[in-house]
Amino acid sequence: MKVFLSLFVIYFLAINIQINNAEIDCTIYANDLKIINLNPFYVSLNFYPSSTSIKLNYESQVTDFNIFNNVNPSSNIYCLKNLENLQLVNTNLTILPDIKNFQKLTSLLIQSDNGIIGQHLPSELGELISLSYLKLFDIKNLEDLPNEIDHLIQLRILMLQNIPNFNKIPDESMGKLINLRVLNLIDLPNLSTIPSTIKNFQSLIQFEITNTNIKNLELENLHGLSTLTIKSNSILQTIEIVNMLLLASIQIQNNNELLTLKFQNLSSLSSLTMSSNSKLTSLDMENISILQTISLSDNKQFKIATFKNLSNLNSINFSFLANFESISFENTPALSTVSITASSLSKNISFLNVPSIINLDLSGCQLTTFPESILTLKSLVNLILKVNQLSTLPLTLSTDLPNLQVLDLSRNNFQGNIFQQSPLIYLRELYLSNNSLVSIDGIGEYESLRNLDLNYNKILSIPLEIMELSSTLNTLTINYNQLHSIPYQMTNMRGLTSLIATYNNISDSERQYLYQIFNPTTIQFII
Ligand SMILES: *[C@@H]1O[C@H](CO)[C@@H](O)[C@H](O)[C@H]1NC(C)=O
Ligand SMILES: *[C@@H]1O[C@H](CO)[C@@H](O)[C@H](O)[C@H]1NC(C)=O
Ligand SMILES: *[C@@H]1O[C@H](CO)[C@@H](O)[C@H](O)[C@H]1NC(C)=O
Ligand SMILES: *[C@@H]1O[C@H](CO)[C@@H](O)[C@H](O)[C@H]1NC(C)=O
Ligand SMILES: *[C@@H]1O[C@H](CO)[C@@H](O)[C@H](O)[C@H]1NC(C)=O
Ligand SMILES: *[C@@H]1O[C@H](CO)[C@@H](O)[C@H](O)[C@H]1NC(C)=O
Ligand SMILES: *[C@@H]1O[C@H](CO)[C@@H](O)[C@H](O)[C@H]1NC(C)=O
Ligand SMILES: *[C@@H]1O[C@H](CO)[C@@H](O)[C@H](O)[C@H]1NC(C)=O
Ligand SMILES: *[C@@H]1O[C@H](CO)[C@@H](O)[C@H](O)[C@H]1NC(C)=O
Image 1 (cartoon, rainbow, N blue to C red):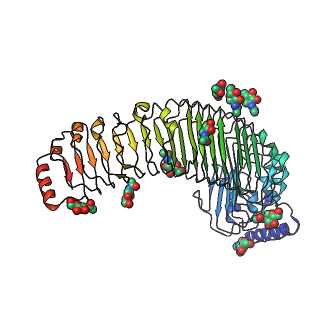
Image 2: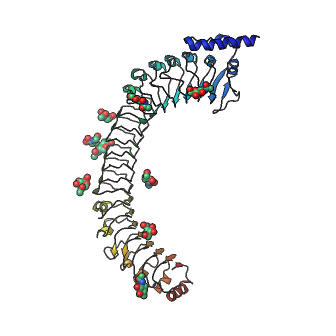
């Protein structure tokens, strides 16, 4: 009878709440478990992070409550005054002013509210003075946060994600959240400004702005910020990032209207990644001493890059820049790898005081002439120029690049013979497949050569001078050419481990003889 009566009281109370928003009377519950048990769904007492369950402390008070997919929790849960962590995932709990009861709540996640929350959250949200983590995710109708959030001074992590109608963060109140460490503004397509008070966030470490309606972004003097992500903001035109002493990594991706970028005084910036910003045309980096890597890809209108006085810049990786014109490096003493691939590089690459470069890859850059500036890179070891339209090499290549060991010129327009021009006496690996070479006369002077790839050319014969490389040459591949035979002396090339020459014009009897004489050698021989 007693139980029945109290159930009736609760029912009456619930109706009452809907009518006049009166506070829930929490005095009628003897303990937390009684409150939990009144939910119209099973609540496990074994706490699991992703199922409907609670955690009790040693005084049998509920400290953690997760509700998943049980759509109508009883509003008496607002009486769980010892709650520290609450997750409401896909539930229809109305957020009542009674939320202020959660004075110990440190973490609140509300995800997929089925539209129950409406346009505004109650101002009492601001009374959760212990709150340090707040995530609102997939909230249908919410438009803003209450001004009273200014009391949430313990808040460290604020994540607002996938809230289609969200359009306002109260400027002044937001500015009070000075302990914020992580701020995510993700999938808020109606948000058009970030709070001007953001400069107060001196403890902010991580900031992401993705898929918003922000047009101009100016971020200044956030001295704690370490990573910044700016993605898929469809109308974003300008970005200014100035004076951030700890900012280490910036990612700017898929902002289709982005036109101008300004970076200044970013003394800790070590990595910059930019991709798919289809209108961005230029990038200018100067005096950023920590910057180590820069990656750019698929920025369709990108034309000009200038890098000046970047004392730690180590590697550049640019790819898929269809309208790229020129790039210049000046005073980049630590630069070791430059890779610009599948781009146009139609005008110019220039290097001034770049003393440590080791790898340069300009594959697929539509080059018709060998960029002269490469000849200034005395330290260069690996030069990859495959898939271009080169037909000549500079005569001074060998003397200008004394450290060059690997040269890849596959798929270019080299014709006839290039070996006689200027012997690359230091070269160890040479890749020349898919050109139109007819002769390799002069090969004898390539004293250091270990690997030679000549596939897909029109070479008619291997000259006997190849015996000059007898102790150095390791592998020779010369498939798809027009050889009639292979010099028999090559059986005595003591350094050779592999000679592959399939798809040539060698008669059957000649082939048989060749197999016979190469048989006793240790050379892997395939024709
Ligand atoms: C929860 O809310 C949604 C949307 O209003 C509704 O379709 C659903 O029936 C509600 N669930 C319950 C159990 O009332
Ligand atoms: C965003 O705001 C505009 C008016 O400014 C409104 O028409 C639209 O429905 C809102 N919601 C979304 C998802 O764009
Ligand atoms: C850059 O930093 C220096 C020293 O920290 C400061 O004096 C200067 O005003 C800053 N420049 C800008 C544009 O903020
Ligand atoms: C870079 O540093 C040099 C020398 O300190 C200075 O003259 C120049 O104005 C600086 N450039 C920028 C963009 O800060
Ligand atoms: C390069 O930048 C550093 C600071 O990053 C500055 O002290 C130095 O003067 C600059 N040098 C030149 C040549 O601009
Ligand atoms: C350069 O960037 C492209 C595209 O982002 C990537 O596929 C490639 O692996 C990168 N190369 C290096 C050497 O990092
Ligand atoms: C190549 O770049 C250098 C340095 O940026 C510049 O001085 C020169 O005018 C450019 N040449 C062409 C042909 O664009
Ligand atoms: C060379 O050309 C052949 C035939 O067109 C092709 O199959 C092969 O992939 C090409 N190799 C290179 C390195 O481009
Ligand atoms: C192959 O060699 C024969 C005779 O040496 C010659 O007549 C023929 O034209 C050659 N074929 C090709 C494709 O070079």
